[in-house]
Image (cartoon, rainbow, N blue to C red; front, top):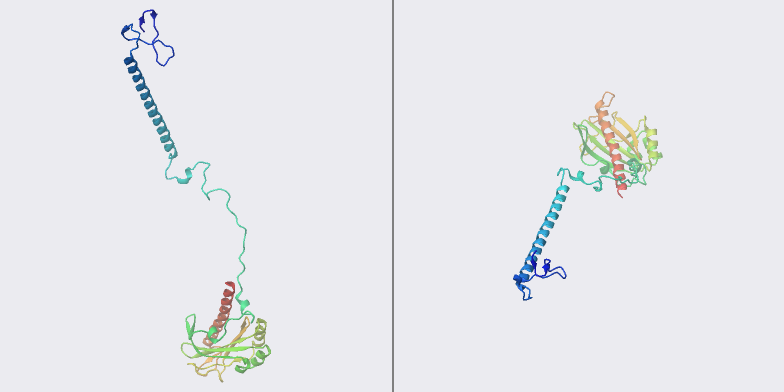
Length: 294
C-alpha cells in the first residue's frame, strides 16, 4: 500500500465498484495510466485461462479415475467363473425359478396284430401262397429248407383227408393254401396247409375238432420234391392262430413210414409249423402298423 496526498489510499480493484484508481508516477495531470491498466487486465485474463485449463484437466482425471475404478470392479474376481459371478439380481434363463410343467399325457396303446388277423373285416391285405411263404427257401436256425410246389383252392375238402373235410366244410372254410418244403438232403418233405375262415372262433373250433384224429392235408409234391406220404405213415399236426387253422403233413421221400423214433421228421415239421404261425403274425403286424400310421 502507498500513501499519496490526502492520506492513505485503498488499492484499486477494477472489479470492485467505486474503488480508487491508481495514477502513474505520482503525476498530477489527472489522466490514468492506460498502458498499465491494459497490462494488468491481460495478466488477469491469462490467470483465468490457466485456472479453467487446470480445472478441466483435474475433472478429466477425476472422471477417468472413476471409470477405471468401475472397470476394475466389474472385472474383479475369477474371469473364468462365468455366470456364477452375476449379481444377485441377475439370472440366467433356465438356471432358476420354477420348472415348467406339462399336463400329463398318455400315448394310445399299440394296436394288437392279432386283432387284424382274427376277422375277415380287418384282415384285408393281399393273401396268397407267395405272400405267406415268399422266396424260394427259408431258414430256421441252422437249417435251410427249399421251397417246392404251391397250391390254392376254395374247395377246402378236396385236398384233405380223414375227418378233416367234413370239419372244414362245417365251419365254412373259404380257402386252403398249400406249400411244400424239403430239407437240405432231400430226405424229408413237409406240406403246410393253411385254412382260412371268416373269424377266429371258427378256426379255433376246427382245431378243437381235428386234434387227435387221423386228419391230414394232402401232400403236395413237385418242383424238385418227390412224391411222399401217398401210402406210408406220416406225421401230421394241427393248430390255429387268428382266423387261420394250419396243418403239416411230413414224411420221408423214399416212402418209409415215420415212427416215434424219427425225431428228424418231427423237427422239420415243427420248424415249418413255427414258420407258418410267424408269417401269420407278421401279416397282423404289418396291418396294425399301417393302421397306426394312417
